[in-house]
Amino acid sequence: DAKTTQPNSMESNEEEPVHLPCNHSTISGTDYIHWYRQLPSQGPEYVIHGLTSNVNNRMASLAIAEDRKSSTLILHRATLRDAAVYYCILRDPYNQGGKLIFGQGTELSVKP
Amino acid sequence: KAGVTQTPRYLIKTRGQQVTLSCSPISGHRSVSWYQQTPGQGLQFLFEYFSETQRNKGNFPGRFSGRQFSNSRSEMNVSTLELGDSALYLCASSLEGGTGVGGYTFGSGTRLTVV
Image 1 (tube, each protein chain N blue to C red):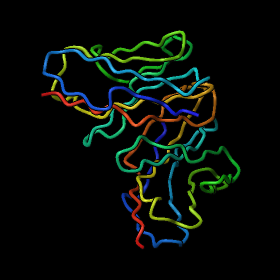
Image 2: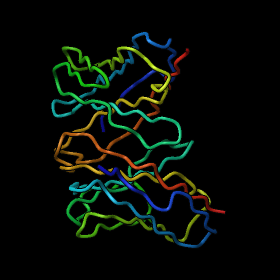
Image 3: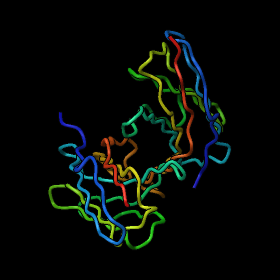
């Protein structure tokens, strides 16, 4: 199973952009890059996913390196409600089905 | 629309007993997955069901089992409970299941404490 590496923790100021990095040097051609976040006392929440191109949705943007060995989740304006653990996950739907392999994630704290 | 519903929210059981947890997916979702979350091991995949068939299984002992009904609702069962089974058990549902590329929607989990 492909692995990802993320910093254990990051800090941000409210209303500033946040860039959460993820390294996945062993990514295969059929791996999709997924991001989930888990707020305190809740289940994980899907944020965004991509394969090769950068992706945007109402929650965040996903920037994928050209060689796909790293990616960055971008929160454009952090709010206090964005404080959570963010997980970067590689998922190959053809070979691992719905199995999500969670690492330790990055704990993001947001200061007012 | 209603999210993923897990019942009960909290449960206390004694070592050696068995427990059944329930998950109702989002209406129309046919894939249901189960995860165990502990402070030491983090989030670990248990199994995935799609249209009543188990499609994927994690590395857990046979005491952990599950099933899915024709209405996509799922249950997981843990027999002969051990103290180490104390955890937050999370259920997630998806429209397409394993071969789809979309995201999964998680419930808030069932907190199981084994004493």
